[in-house]
Image (tube, rainbow, N blue to C red; front, side, top):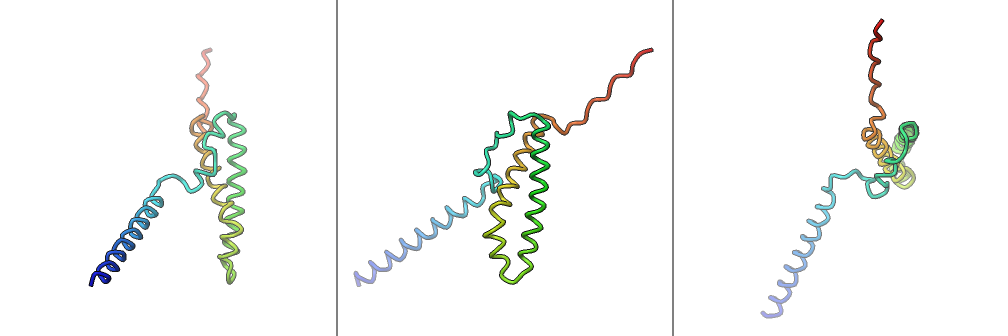
Length: 123
């Protein structure tokens, strides 16, 4: 009888441990940061000029579009989802994070803000 109780206790401890591990993993997925936050240095664009930021952002938008097309093409083939994840998804995540960092810097520096109209000249 004591052996049976000991096995039940171990099973309860094991299941409790697995449950806590599952909760810990689920908590990590609930973080609100973008997927590539740890890959991209968020302040990399803070000391660049507006033309540099806009140029980089435009390049990232074009690369993101290209990678999305490649992912869609790979996903349409049989077994393509494996190719998609191994070849393109990590780079796509990195490019999206870089684009978001560039957009944050553009907002910070008011790079997209329209120019104020000139005051009317007095005759």
